[in-house]
Image 1: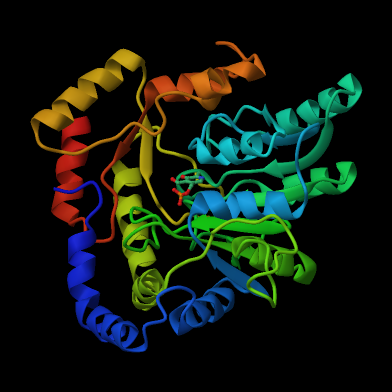
Image 2 (image 1 turned 180 degrees about the vertical axis):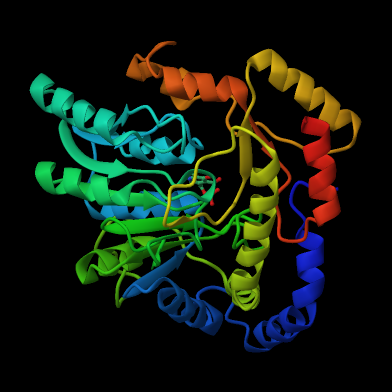
Length: 367
Ligand SMILES: Cc1ncc(COP(=O)(O)O)c(C=O)c1O
């Protein structure tokens, strides 16, 4: 049994991949070739936004809009400590300060009441200027954007949706990628829509922001390749990765339905699964449950591993306790929900090709 099965999926799209790869070997435009433009058009149609800007990774998809807004030293950017390191790393990389806000113990996403308190506290301290929020759609479940958008209006903040794990998700029939000022997704191979290497995309309806992001992605250039107008990155997607994504997009909705069915089977039989609010659709990037205690989790991991059932802990250490963020001065006890989750959470196999029988086997072992 695989935690994520990319092989079965590859067998389904192999013929189409070969045709596309042959075409690329013929035309030879390996970087930013026609496949990249085709992909961007299909992505913006799929999500329902004006601009889909492909780039080199989900990390760069977060970094580029922050650069476009000139976020830097003295600026505060709010996010959660219960996420992958990239979410907060990009803030620190630009010299800005990540302000962590604890999550709900149900959805594992940013707690909006605590977010507002953190913003008010930062304003009253007067040391940093609140600039942006990066809510994370953890494991595929979108954050509470209706409330987040009210908060951003009140305090005049920007929002970048960290949709690295949630591409394909929805709130009330509105697709992930349309929330906030801009959204960032990842095409890392294990993601619901993944390529065969690193890749990512930025989504926005803001023309000015889109133009800046496009320039930053290619060393800050617009028309003249050898005259940079902004400081940028080598943040492009290559044509081979775009070709993989184009083929995978043709079966993506079907795969989302298959993931949904597996999630329903798990949920019918297991307690303490991640909560998905009414009218929210998860992309089911990961399926995570909470065990009663750290010790119970150890027992379950041992049992699953003995039966060759792969399992992973996302995330065993919240970001505020990582060495990389030690200069921020946080300590154990600062974010009790995130700390508690990191001790009790466990992710189970989740991919579109997981059989009903295998899900049953996993459920039986846990029960
Ligand atoms: C929540 C979150 N944000 C950002 C990223 C970064 O994406 P990438 O690995 O494509 O740079 C990831 C990737 O795992 C992620 O899970």
